[in-house]
Length: 85
Ligand SMILES: [Zn+2]
Image (cartoon, rainbow, N blue to C red; front, top):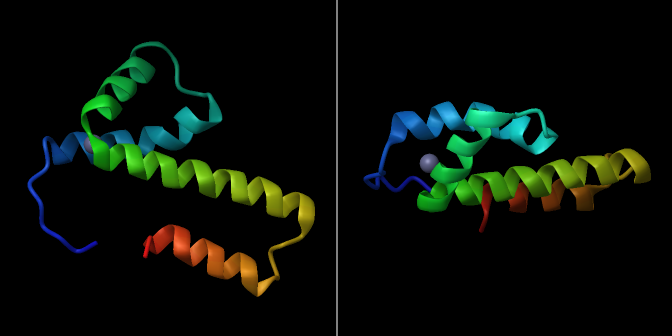
């Protein structure tokens, strides 16, 4: 976090970031999907972002079922996930 590292294509990354949530929802189709997947193969940063989003989405689904929202444990887990210590 906070490291200024040279990335392959930063503009591309932020553009694809918007697509990732759709990708996770299975709403991304055809060319967009393929482009994202190709980019994920060569961009570890986007892969880890997608990974985080995927865990987060799973966590949200689980807490909808289990009412974990109010639990401090859930919050701690969320923070760990977002700020990867
Ligand atoms: Zn990327």
